[in-house]
Image (cartoon, rainbow, N blue to C red; front, side, top):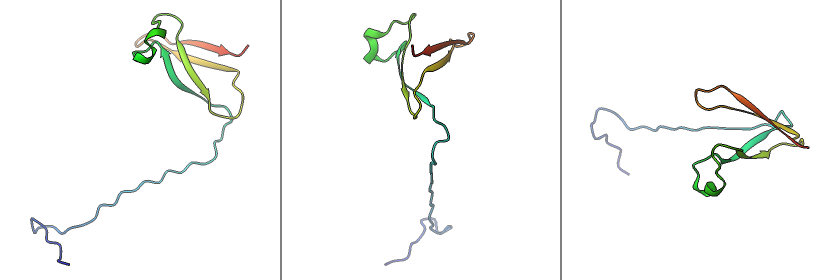
Length: 91
């Protein structure tokens, strides 16, 4: 095997090693909800027929933990507008 020769002869070769370690423990909570999709209002062409832009937003949520979800509070606003809330409850 021939020795490595630097093209500029002013610096030697070397290695650049990069690594990442991500580990997760057991969740420290029992209640969690994720927003899976915003059906309306949206620009997504898959929901073009269900997209009533100004009324009745449709949001798909998912319970990602053990406890049964009985209520979700949404906070929302139009850019630059005041924040409003909507509470969804199981009847």
